[in-house]
Image 1 (cartoon, rainbow, N blue to C red):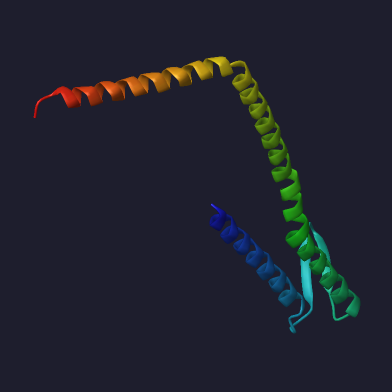
Image 2 (cartoon, one colour):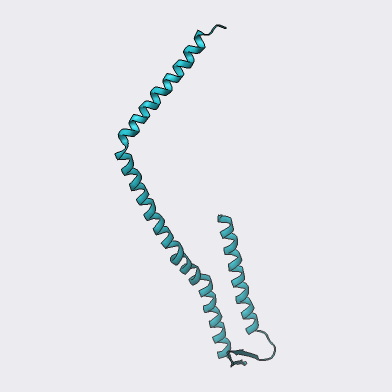
Length: 135
C-alpha cells in the first residue's frame, strides 16, 4: 500500500511540474504577442517586462501552492483528525479491556486452572492406556 501512495505522489508531482513548465513555455515563446480571453475579458501580453514578470510570479505562486500548500492541507485536514480519532478509540478499547481483565480475573484464573488440570488428566489417561495394552 505504501508503494501505491509513493507512485501516486510522484505521478502527481510530475504532472504539476509538467504543467508549470508548459505555462512557462507558453509565456516565453518567441512568436507573436499572446492574446488570452478569460470570461470575455481580454488579456494582452505584449513585449513589456511587467507583463512577463507578473505572469512569472503568478506561475511561481501557483507552483508553490500546488507543491506545498495543497499536500499540507490534505495532511493536516484529513490525516490528523483520523489519527486523533484512532488514538481515542485505541485508548477507550485499552481501558475497556483492562477493566474487563481486572473484573474477570477470578474467572480467568479458574478457567486456566481447569485447563491445566484437564489437560494433564487427558495426558495421564493416554499414557496409562498405552502402558497397559499388550504389544
